[in-house]
Image (cartoon, rainbow, N blue to C red; front, side, top):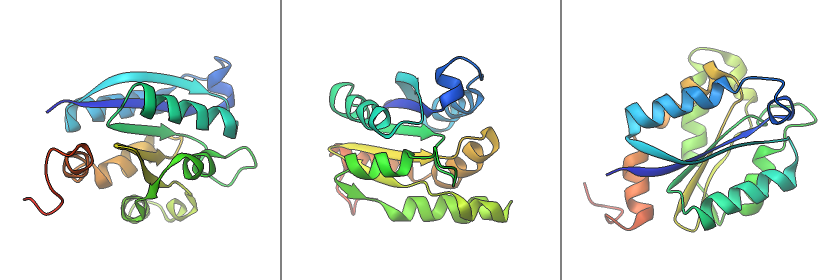
Length: 164
């Protein structure tokens, strides 16, 4: 099963071409190698709540991505709005994934507790917020990647929730 995956980077500097998006490269590699996913959309938007929301809606509703992974905008800075944008567009929250990411990352650095990333469902799409750093992306995504095929299979209706 090949999953349709969309990548969204929230970064003012990245959207202006002032910074290379190395975090999205890490996500792309993990999605293709560990998850068996195909990237169906990728974009960089400024740290603006409305632009993040619009991109998430288009990725889920138009591209019908099974999984949307965001990077950036999950910290404590005044420009970090990704979790708020995500919460406004999801139908249901999936707190266990966000908790597992923080717990996994905290095994390497206690600063991981400062990440405000959320995970949730919009329609049949799963949205996951990751930090902006390549290291944070890797640690957080690896903490949950083994559970994503099952979660996506349930969301897509391919299996029932209690199937093994």
